[in-house]
Every structure is written in structure tokens, then in C-alpha cells.
Image (cartoon, rainbow, N blue to C red; front, side, top):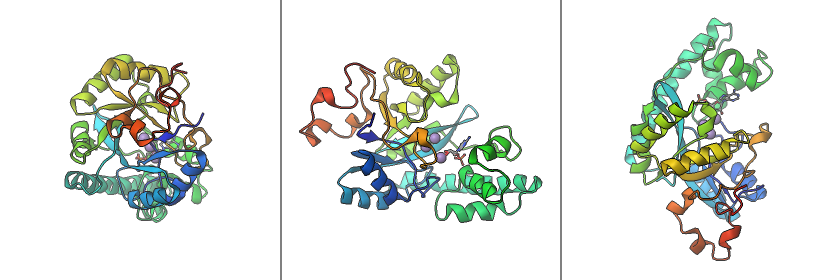
Length: 299
Ligand code: AMP
Ligand code: MN
Ligand code: MN
Ligand code: MN
């Protein structure tokens, strides 16, 4: 099923494979009408994506995916419909950038201990001007012939508990969601079921998320298990959170996360986009019952 909305994807401004304009073109060809560019801790690709979206006649939502720490663990919060020029956001992102660079140096040092030299410079070169992420380290290690897939690099070196993993303290939920709100945006907890939290930890997280000003849950995620939609929809209902849909597309090598290939939001979930646009007014030709997000069957 193709969704008109895809509110989570990555470009070369962070760890995606396509340039911002290449991504917009791919989304347009996939049938997406509203795309949010959510690069990791940067809005560096937004201007190019906006210009491309204007050419293709689709809507580009200015957005970001923040890395935040809660209870000692990293969680991702998507900020939708933000002003990239906002001063509080810019200051926060500058701090995060510094954290990422320090972490990258430490990751490279640890890889060096395992005989993989030059990883900082290598990852930096692959990342270009974009946010430096573990994906870039993984690409570098593959390019050196030390592993054959990105997955293997994560499994052997980069995942939590592995030799080159660097525990990182990111900004708090309060800080990160504060930047998003200062920038006029809406905080959405990304891929909530991917963390495999117990029900009681999930409830604690959602209480903290709401207290910090979060307003949405990524109910439909491209990388979720089949039962994840109903489970996260239940959390959205009981915590009064709006629902978002996003593929988390990074590259064509990840066919399980294709642009726009997303199920509709289940019945009774308020679409997050209703917070920034009266989409019936903006799309007068649409029939409410046929619109993604107002599925009457809920499947
Ligand atoms: P970072 O924000 O620097 O910690 O990098 C996290 C990124 O690494 C995620 O957004 C994914 O794109 C990627 N990633 C994490 N785990 C894996 C994995 N097991 N296989 C491939 N990519 C992964
Ligand atoms: Mn990523
Ligand atoms: Mn994420
Ligand atoms: Mn993502």
C-alpha cells in the first residue's frame, strides 16, 4: 500500500544514500504527496529538498530526527514542521554536532585498536558535509574489505555492547523537544516499537515524552513488525498522542523501508498532519473516507 504521506526519511545530509533532490524525485515517483525530510540532527538538506519539491509539485515538510537520551538510552524524536532558522534549534544542533564529532573520534580510536585504521578521516570523507553517523563508519569498514555488509559491521563492531560502541549522552527529551517546539514544530517519537521495551518501560517513556512536550507517535513505521502498528496505535490512544507515518527510508538497499510503502493509520488515530494543515481545505478534491489516516476498516 502506498501512503500519500511519508514523514520520515534520510538524505545525504545525514546517512541516506540519495541527495535531498534525488530523494524528493524518488518520493514523487513512488506516489508520495507529502514528504518530511528528517535527517539525523541536521536540517542541512531541507532547502534543496524544498526547491525540488516545488518542481515536482509535492509538499515538503521541514523536519529533523533528533538523537536524545532518556533513562540512559538513546531515543529518536522526529520534529515535524519546524523553522530550520530558529535560534534555539540551531544552538541545540551545534551542541549535538560537537557530541557527534567527539564520539566519532572515540569510535575511530576503538576501531584502530581492532586494526581498522583511518576510520575518522574515512567516515568523515564519506559523510561529506553531512552529519557523521555510525552508518558512515560502517561504510568505511566495508570499503576497507573488513566486513561485507553494513549489518555485519554493526553486529561485529558498532552496536551496543560491541568493541567500537561509544556510550553517548545526547540532549535530554526536555531539551530536544524544547528545540522542536521553539522552532514551531511537533515532536513525534520515532519507531517506538523498535526499542523492544516492556509495557511498563514503554508507559514510563510515554509519560516522560508527554511531559517533555511530545505530541505524536510514529504509529506506522516502515521498519516495524506486522503487529507493531496495532500495538503503537493502542499507546497513541491511551496517551492521547497523534499518529504519524514514516518509512525511515535510507537507501534502495533496504527494500523493507521503501519510500511511501506504508499502511494507513488505524481507525481513531488523529493524523499528526492535522496539526499543521487542514488537509481537506488544502486538498478539496479528497473524499474524507478514502484518505489515508481515516481508514474505516483500520487494516
Ligand atoms: P548514529 O545516529 O550515529 O548512532 O547512527 C545510527 C544509524 O545507524 C541509524 O539511523 C541507522 O541508519 C544505522 N543503523 C543502526 N543499526 C544498524 C544496523 N544494525 N544495520 C544497519 N544500519 C544500522
Ligand atoms: Mn540512520
Ligand atoms: Mn531513528
Ligand atoms: Mn530515521
